[in-house]
Image 1 (cartoon, rainbow, N blue to C red):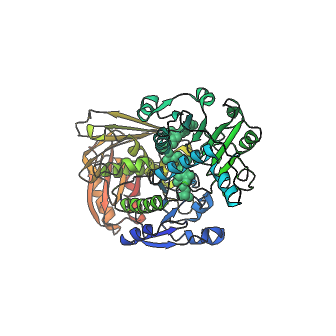
Image 2 (cartoon, helix red, strand yellow; image 1 turned 135 degrees about the horizontal axis):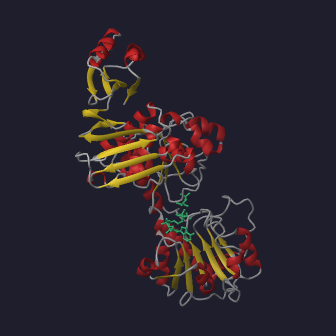
Length: 528
Ligand SMILES: NC(=O)C1=CN([C@@H]2O[C@H](COP(=O)(O)OP(=O)(O)OC[C@H]3O[C@@H](n4cnc5c(N)ncnc54)[C@H](O)[C@@H]3O)[C@@H](O)[C@H]2O)C=CC1
Ligand SMILES: O=C(O)C(=O)COP(=O)(O)O
């Protein structure tokens, strides 16, 4: 798979190395960090690009995505993609990718810095000195040594925070629905359920994405289960700690202090929380280091170049089928799936009746996810509406879900037909079986009728069904030639009562179809 990437727009402050790497690889780049503030102009401009690179400031909402009629890929020079409407992008077949890990260490260090500042109230102490005051009594801190740090979200950043704070003598406990205790114990974190964790924690730090399950994860109820005076840090996303509940807990002493780098609205709608004397606020600086910025800028540019060259889809978060389809060995099967889907669509197969894909042969052992996406991309092509809609391996599964199409995949290691591998797609009463030879897609049978030898699916073809007769082929070829068509080949099923066939044409025209109408039961023009 090679994605054509000619023009990329960068709408946020990204290190200049990003532009350099893209340009070195022949990609035209426009960087304008102000345009996004003028929505109308931004929407008009974005239509010209096939790539977009952002950080967290640009809100890539559905209206931006729908205006970007040529867009193929959105790159996040950083981790969180909550500023990108990934569902809208997926429906349009646009790849969304981030640079996982590029800013992990910076975000982890910033979290640790906030924990240290909280333990000694350093910012307020600094402020008094700046005010010309020598006030030692007001700043009695407490050691981190021997205290318990609860880490919610034990992914990349959570783990690095744990390792660093252990060197201060903190006991680290944590919770994550995906990372089990057997893994977290390897980096010194005792895994426990949230209910056990709340009353044990002296400090709580959150490192999850903002998703429905994590919204207000630390709120009024959970604060109530914590030790009085618990200190909290949010360097992940605003809203994981409920801002209203936090303000109340700070006021009534249930929370002893908060280090905040992220907010529900950025910049905050009001500064009540940021100005609270027990809060240490920073303006989303977790990833703002020279090192992290250089890393994410180069990484996102290199990832774009790799996609363009069909080399890798590292960092893609909505392109699992495309990712699985990358290897050269899978390419012919991806093409076959799409051909079989298109062919069924021309036969009027109704996808609402459900799609059953059976595939056999050890070559196809791991083909499930990309085969179903590729069949759907052919089958549903006529149903993908809207300007700039692309039905591809990213958008086809999303469209099937939206249309309520049920897809079933079955795998068998042994191919009973004697072929090395084959794919059978059944939709309602229509069934097609195909296989590959080198890079070619071949049709083996249609509705149970076998081709004499598997027939190539490529170029302009007429697929017909007719009553078998001795002179059928001669009559068909005669009519087509008389209509001005140049026939380059023919492949038919073994004669029975009814016969299917493929006539290969130098170029297709409806004239050719009309010329054989009286000789066949059905005929469709295919362009594969
Ligand atoms: N302040 C800043 O500038 C930065 C903020 N971030 C944010 O930090 C957060 C974490 O980033 P990474 O560690 O790189 O992500 P990650 O994907 O490596 O780890 C996130 C972890 O959260 C866990 N998780 C998901 N749902 C959960 C739940 N309900 N309860 C507990 N854990 C749950 C996941 O299983 C995963 O292990 C993200 O929100 C990211 O956007 C990242 C970089 C910089
Ligand atoms: O990578 C992330 O998730 C961040 O929050 C960093 O945001 P930024 O790139 O600094 O706008």
